Image (cartoon, rainbow, N blue to C red; front, side, top):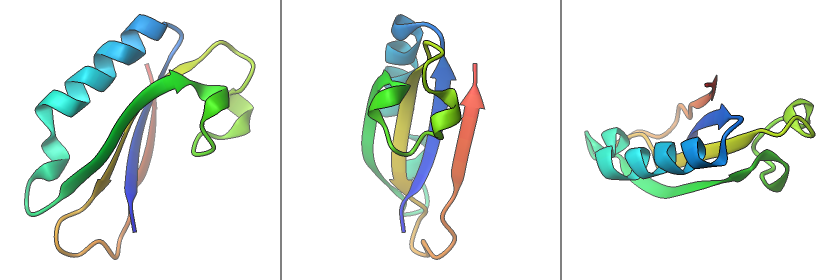
Length: 81
């Protein structure tokens, strides 16, 4: 299964910079892990973000990854910046 780390912010440019940093640093590719995607956008455009955050002007940066050779314990983390 895939894991997700999502950062929410009220600033579209901040979301873009966070996404770029996630893509460039790739801490989730260690120990045979693999980054599957890095995206950013408005929270209303992503089903992985709970709908209670819709309508408040939030933007997100998201990294989707696999945790090393044993991905039987997926992770989900939502950070509000």
